[in-house]
Length: 250
Image 1 (tube, one colour):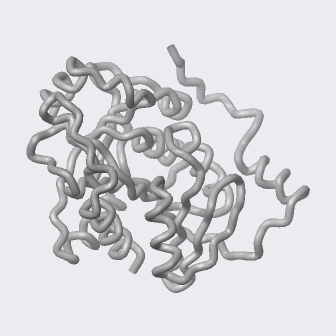
Image 2: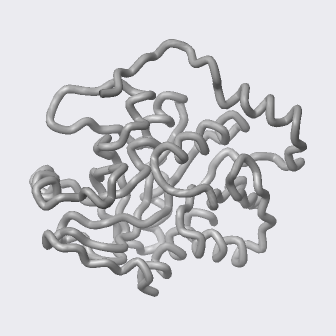
């Protein structure tokens, strides 16, 4: 069991960035105030091609800078809660303040269908990373919350583009191969919409560092019928991800 400890850390992202800069030359760029975090390589490549943006490789991640909108796009760093926390910490040390996940998630509810768009407003913390940033909380489920103001901005952008959104809570897990029938049924009764691997960690780190964060998912697979229905490589899913990104980057 992880017990939250709020005492100062011996190693911070700011110190690491300073150490890195003494040993390696960082690209001479103005880091944006906002970034999209992407986990699908094809989505990052599509954005790079569409925006004709230059890609920089720093701190084990790929970064696109879109000067016209002061927004960046990050990818190529892997998946899961721990690496997401590291990426957010290091980008925050470089001046980034707003973080939006744009990725895929599984559906837990029959009303949330393949290629639907879901705004995750809070997420069950069924991963280990968030407990190093926020304390546990009593009750059946422990949540981390997205930033309400940033959620509202995302809703405005996507609905003005005539995109239909589901809004609600998700389940973040470290163990995608341990999504049991019993656990899914339990979460269905709590009206949990999605399952992913990063959202609750992002929200926890952002809250701890006093940053803004949220997550937008396109449904790529479903557990709603208590069996697995995968559609990861569906053109409908990839197209919807592109539509979401296009409207968040303009």
